[in-house]
Length: 201
Image 1 (cartoon, rainbow, N blue to C red):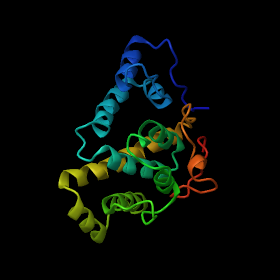
Image 2 (cartoon, rainbow, N blue to C red):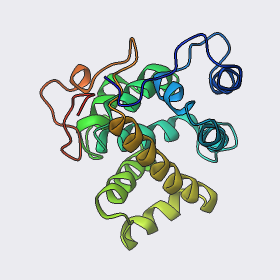
Image 3 (cartoon, helix red, strand yellow):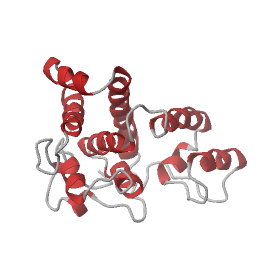
């Protein structure tokens, strides 16, 4: 059970307007947004930033974005947000089941990755999660592949989804209906970072 109960319909006018703005037309707001709506000022601030991170102005493409997000959420042990992104964006990003499994519990050197830039993104997320930094050798390789705006976006995107993961895990949010679990893509595996797989952990 969530530590802060998500709002349920009928939503108050202000909170309902915020929730409608945060989801595509006709799509019910996810639990994370319904909890956040209990603090409308925070929700408005996060909506603006989240819209940039998931919008077309972000300098990396959908596939690169989702590689960073899924690896970050898995590293944080956040099955909730990981599952939302697998369900909503995994197919649109062209990620194969093997690649989703690798992002969850594998390595950048797994054979499912044949693009050097994608392998570098995975290594960058791992370094940021492990060390809070990217070392000189890896940074040089990233800088040879990505533009400065892209490098900035990747680092901030990783940090943003650390914050989202911390929030979703701390709130003890249960998986959204139809969203996968870590075990669905890597039976018996422990996500990168060694965090427990259960949504309530």
